[in-house]
Image (cartoon, rainbow, N blue to C red):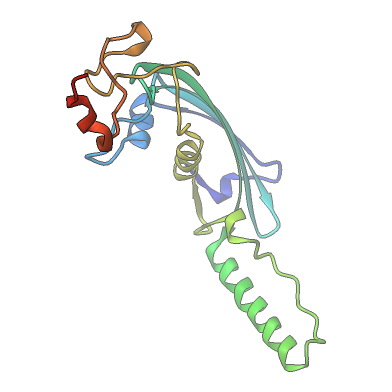
Length: 197
């Protein structure tokens, strides 16, 4: 999903791309040794619009992705949908560097004249609000992957009242009590168990 900058006209550029199940699986893959996380339930479609903005490009994208993941309590597979909404401003790397230098120079001049100098305007935004690109092409895939990973639920449950698994025998407690004694006695009172009355 690479867009050449010259493809973005005055009216912007509309895109509709399919995210294959294999690509989504690759985005969601966990490093070796980590527990299994979410998996796609099929392909998804992303609708995107790229518009030229002063000093950069504004990217807006939306997608609904069908996923499945284990319940954090009972490990039963849960199906859910994730609605992604991405909005980013992309600034050319060279321009961002020039704006940083200009801003630093203005700040230095302001200190030299006792703080009365006016600071010049700069396109440089807070780093958390912008991304950089090389000025020739824009790669949408890394932006969408980052948004997908950020939106994944941390505490997915099959049901709010899910009882989970027995920590002793591993039985699913939603299906019924397993009969295990799950209360852990205080070891300081363990000697009292041996007293016969």
